[in-house]
Length: 202
Image (tube, rainbow, N blue to C red; front, side, top):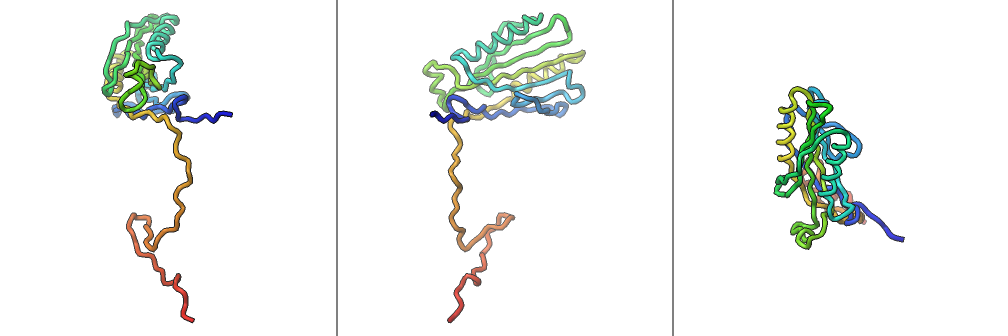
């Protein structure tokens, strides 16, 4: 019987993500999203979502991009040809979409692949990415150009941590006895009174 774990090479944890968000935007919780922020005054006017991608093939990024564009066109929208952008020093595929049925609606998406290790040895060998992220921005309404500009700036501000591919250490913490100096809740080290520990005279 095999033991599976997350994070692991089979089930990698998503890389850490940070994004600079304008004061006029606010976070919200949504199922299946690592991050989800909306334009506070009108959540329908602007939204940015970050999703984790676990690869099903070495062509993860290309397949995600083409699948997203195909779904957009299936629903009656149109999409530009993908183009390359750099986000936090990583090459990413980006594209824009629009909905013919809603002329005031536009969206963009950026897909990135993450490779194993700081040297990206898998990338050097030509292997597929271990994990990936999809960042989707949606802007609607009469001020969609302003919202789109904010979304673009948020996407380009993103920074990422390293992948976690090993299970966390679950060994018991050190349970050794403290010495005669204990640390109080303020972080200061205080001498412990050991007089009660001394044996009384016979």
